[in-house]
Image (cartoon, rainbow, N blue to C red; front, top):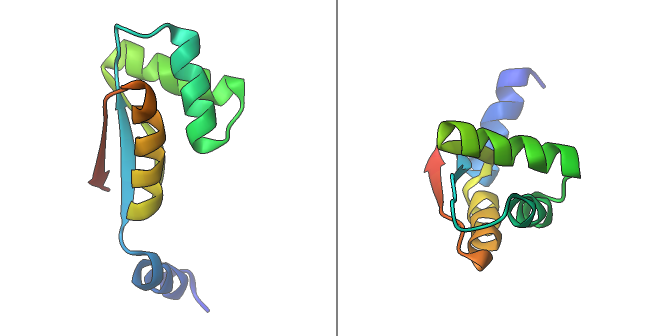
Length: 90
């Protein structure tokens, strides 16, 4: 199976790729945001901190790129503490 065939099969099964975007937040402590990112995508402190700092410095950051349902799930976990997110196609 070629790389293109794998991609096509994946898109048929899971849908087109989407991304979960986290927007900068001025009402939560940085450790709260990093902790929620860790919970949402099951990552380590370093990765969560990098995502949080990217959102802080640029206004937004991609938390995950996956199929739509996974991105919506990650978004819902981030929004549990009222973080602002958006899920959109890549």
